[in-house]
Image 1 (tube, helix red, strand yellow):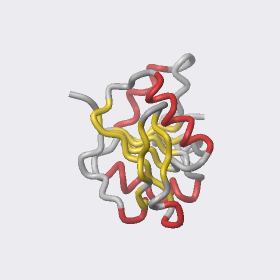
Image 2 (cartoon, rainbow, N blue to C red; image 1 turned 180 degrees about the vertical axis):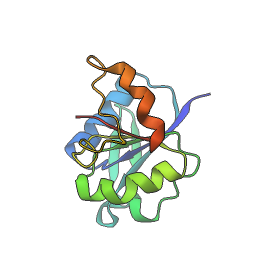
Image 3 (cartoon, one colour; image 1 turned 90 degrees about the vertical axis):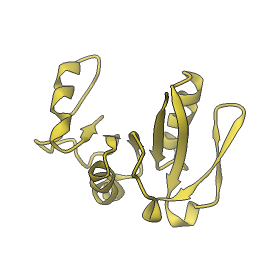
Image 4 (cartoon, one colour; image 1 turned 180 degrees about the horizontal axis):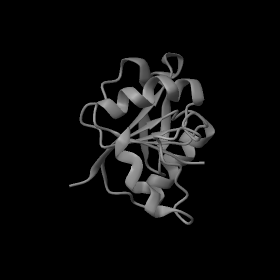
Length: 129
């Protein structure tokens, strides 16, 4: 059984790279969802060399059932939507500056402080530089 993953900011440079890496490393995902702003909804993004994903509107997306949210849409967007996703049970990994200094959100650099990951359950959000 694989994960259900949402990539938020999927049309940006970081979002496209996240999609590429997920596919390249054969991440065990049963479903990958590309999310972005309303103006990008309906656009198509590559997921690996063969698959194309249709971008969905972040504002109207229901996060229930998603396991992991990879966020890189910009700090203001993460401030609004990461808590909403976390409340729906998503483990949010945020790559923006929004939560980096928040004392209730662990800032994780896997090669440096992997044991700090234990603190993520406070808000279900992990900050990543």
